[in-house]
Image (tube, rainbow, N blue to C red; front, side, top):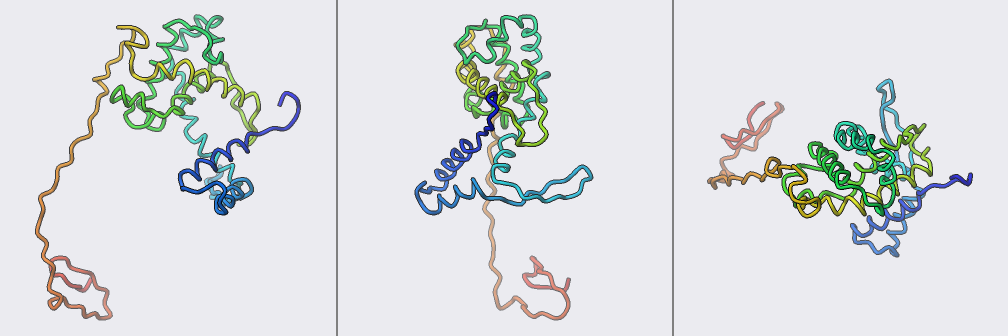
Length: 265
């Protein structure tokens, strides 16, 4: 931290994970089993396998928080890699108006950016719709589906854009070498997105931006799940047990479906 003291957000992550886990499993958080789960999350270890630079399998003992960290950042790099491509229009406008637009990135949604700022971001966010690992399967197939995309997915895209424009340092020696400044930056970017952009990302372009302001063809991305064709019910005759030859010998046998018995392989 800037004060020179050591800090991490492990307890916050672990307590939240424990609460969600108990809720999913139907466990009372005061039960003995829930306590054992909590102890494991804080103090337990597991064997983690990976491949080194020489493509050799290496197994190490890791704490549970390492597992949780891997799950949380697993797809984050996908957002960062696509920022220059998906937000190309927004980035160009940003550098043309850098002095006035920079404060909007982390103002917790309190400022009033111009309409072109809001539209350019929403258009860039929709460019992630082609990546199933970023926003899920066919998120743009309808306005309702776009509105129902998990909040954390859209939030990560905004955080990746903000860190890119603010030129945040991404170099870490290992997974637990994070910095307090990165934590506070991510929290500020997340809050800004949820206050300003999330309400405008529900597919109601005419209400949010004005009639004709956003040129997006929803029909082009529409998709309906094909109806399944039910197979005709067939007849199945159970073979007479007396006609089935169950005798075996030393040779390997295989079951013949047509004959209804074991035959030499």
